[in-house]
Amino acid sequence: MTIHAEPTTSPATVTDCAVELRGVSKVYAGGVHALDAVSVDFPRGRLTSLLGPSGCGKTTLLKIIAGLLPATSGEVLVNGKSVRGPGPERAFVFQDFALMPWATVLANVAFGLHLRGVGKAECQDTARHYIAEVGLSGFDDKYPHELSGGMRQRVGLARALAVKADVLLMDEPFSAVDEQTRRKFQEDLLRLRAIENKTFVFVTHSIEEAVYVSDRIVLLSTRPGRVSQVIAPDIPRGDDVDAIRRHPVYLDTVDTIWRGLKRYLD
Amino acid sequence: MIILGYRIPMAASLLVWGALWEIAGQLQVSFLLPPLSSVFAAMVEIVPTRTFLSALWVTGYAFIIGNFLSIAVGVPLGLLMGRSVIADRIFLPWVNVFLSAPLTALVPVIMVLFGLGQTTIILTVVLFAMWIIVLDTRAGMRSVAPSLAEMAHSFGASPWQAFRRVYFWAALPEILAGVRLGVIRSVKGVIIGQLLVTIVGFGALFQIYGSKFLMEEFWAALFILFAFAFLLAEGLAWLERRVDYYAASRA
Image (cartoon, rainbow over all chains, first blue to last red):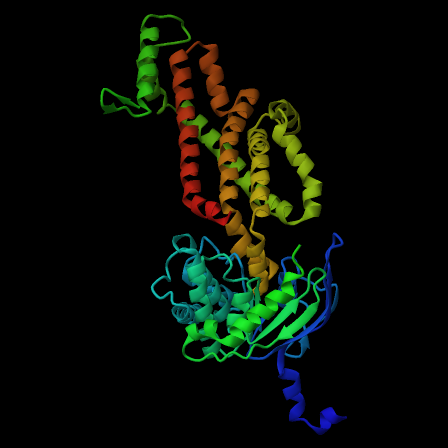
């Protein structure tokens, strides 16, 4: 009744969260209980990290949101609608980049658009735009094996951005690149988050990385994964990105999370 | 190999063996071994003859049709087996049986069923070539990186799009390796088929030359056949190397 009485507020409450999980559980065919009744919301326009001890099912959870894995029970709502498979409103960035080695950077980035039947010229224009945005201008015609690991992940990122999805799902995107490249990536992600109005779901096993880039951090317990805590570190992310790592809230949050996770080890 | 500061190419040993053959031939060690020079002379002589050209045509025809059929059936079957567990269970035992079986023993059966003509030869080629193509294509399909499959799925590829744009290309190095091995086997297939049927193509040619002790012509025809098979295999290996870089990069 109230839904009809207040038409202006009801869509707002529905679309407040880009992704909502309702009691999502996952039991693998072998009997491994990966996730147990995970209910968590991902606010629109924010970067939320999934963090937890190894084997806690954070990648499983991300793949369920992506529609790549079916949940054993529970529901995934994206923009208020229940989803069962992949959809154009979500894009995925893979840990191992998942680039097509036989295709150029341009063709790899245009892959998603191409599948949607976008015309060739528009495909290429959009792809070039995002290749430039991730800092790979001039590499359009290179092949993945001619690029460094960090550059390959930039291609993966550009491919996900090119389809203009609302939700960007990132599965430990920086774990396969070296430490220095990773730091640069983290800074670039903050810049990207500022200019692209998207909802980011970011899986990582690095506490520092999660605190550095996230608006919210969802801590998962050891297997079967449950939500043990949701932390929203209040760190000002101004122009000086290097100041973040020296901010007292950053240091305290890293410390708190480490104390919480330590008990799951050994 | 370097001798006295000179780099000696690998093919140089062929010259040494050729010279030995020539000497043995000139010394008339055996009537089976005519001098190499007269073999080459015979080669120049027989190539333009109608018997030879028609043998070449008949053989080439059976070879090309047989290979075409092997690839047309073998690649899709291998792709299917690589994707579908059910198809794999149904076909894999047969593929393995035929891959390891002494196929020459089956040729007389085909002869009984299809007569002493081109059909039998073509089927022999298929019998020799197809199974390795199936098995290699299957292996290629199974080695497609799981994340590449997930990538295609997550960007909304239909099964057909995923297959055409991702799986096929990802499996291409193995498919080409299978085709190369299939082509090499089908050279055996076409000659064994023709020899057993004996009245067709090179089989007939070898039959005539052998029974009349025309050893120069016999060797000349054999050389041409060897060279042909070798060049074919090398050409396909070259094609395969061109896609090798991404087979190695996918790990």
